[in-house]
Amino acid sequence: MSWRDWVRGAEVEPSIYAADFLHLGAQIETLLAAGARIFHVDVGDGRFIPPVTIGPILVQAIAPPIHAAGGRVECHLMVESPSDQLALLAEAGADSITFHLEVAPDPASVIASARAEGLGVGVAFNPETSVETAAAAAAGADFALCMSVHPGFSGQAFLPESVDRVRRLRELVGPELLLQIDGGVGPANARSVREAGADLFVAASSIFYADDIAGAYRSLAAVVA
Image (cartoon, rainbow, N blue to C red; front, side, top):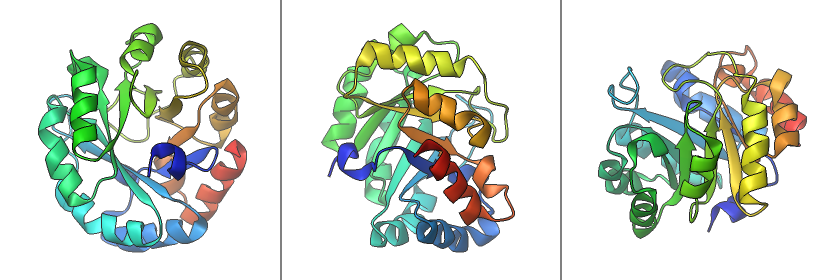
């Protein structure tokens, strides 16, 4: 299956980075029951971003119940050497990886390597990277990820200029490429980003920091529907 088969119009992706790891399995079950189908896993190496986060061992643990419910696991590689992680993540059960343009001088090569591992693939770009550069680099990928914060830490405020960046990206890539937004996404800004052309909405603190994570997921999904 491809990303086009996975996506049901606009899709909200809970970001595991903000989860309560003491109760992670229960939270995933709750969100699956609420309708979530694509889960976003941030992999940080302590170099491209300051914190070391989570990796293949966690993916191996969460992928089976997510797959059993018909869901998918997407891994966002915030690392300096994304190609080094592809085989490990594919073996662990990842369905897709996203790598950063800023550490990939030959993005077509990383895309091809991900495809060879049977992975879907997205191309991410930071707020300082031009939309034009990102649009060219995303050729052959399933989606482009516009970062709406500086990557590294959950809970940052959404950068308002990201709406115009998504709109410009949509103008450049046309209707075929899926567009993802990640960073500070919540009910206050999701509709404007959807109207600008985004399809995929990574949500961390706006879901996992809520008292009712199922309700938070449903509310955000309703905003972008």
